[in-house]
Every structure is written in structure tokens, then in C-alpha cells.
Length: 129
View 1 (cartoon, rainbow, N blue to C red):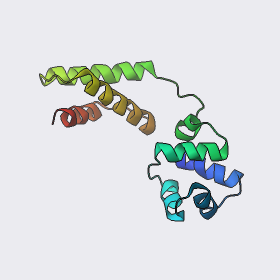
View 2: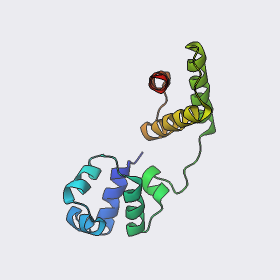
View 3: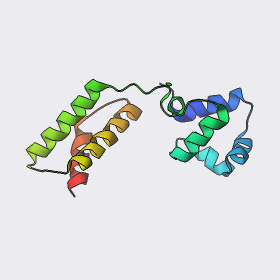
């Protein structure tokens, strides 16, 4: 699966842009572009500007497809794991905090390509700390 920085490298090549020229167009340093190209996180605002600059969909740039497809099975597995972990530890957290936790775990799973119960245990520990 192609990563965000690989898609960005492809766009640079297709458009004949150097890091320096992209940096100028984005009003950032060439070092910032270099960091992005080596996997450093890109802010939502910068992703939107990059997508507009290259004429691509933000979702494609971020996820590698035009419309992120919700993986309902994965989402249900994460929710069940979170609820099991909370119940196992006799913990209760507000619904909005639980939803934020599930979304964070879901994004992490999509980006990393896998789901592990250990991820949930760590998130539950952080949420109640």
C-alpha cells in the first residue's frame, strides 16, 4: 500500500517540482518538505493546500483512495474491544471520550494496516489516566 509521502513524491515527479519549488508554493521551508517526504505528519491545513495545488482529492492524498471506505467490521471489532477493556477494568468513561478513542484507534489501524488488542489496552489506560 502506497504511503502519503510516496503519493506526494509521485505528484512532485509528475509535475516536475523540486522540494524547493514546492516549499515556495506552500510558503514553508524546503526542510519542512523534506520532513514530509520522510514520513513526518502533515497538518490538515497543509494537506488541503497540497491537494488544491496538485488538483487531487484530500482523501486520495491522505488515504490513497478518493473516498475513504469505512470498514464496519474493523470499527465493530475496535468498539467491542474498547468496551470489553473498560468492563474488564470496571471503568466508565463519557461517550464522547469513548467515541474519540474509537476514532483514534480506527485511524491508527487504517494507517498501520493492522489491529491489535494491545493498542486498545494502551488507549484505555491513557483515557482513564
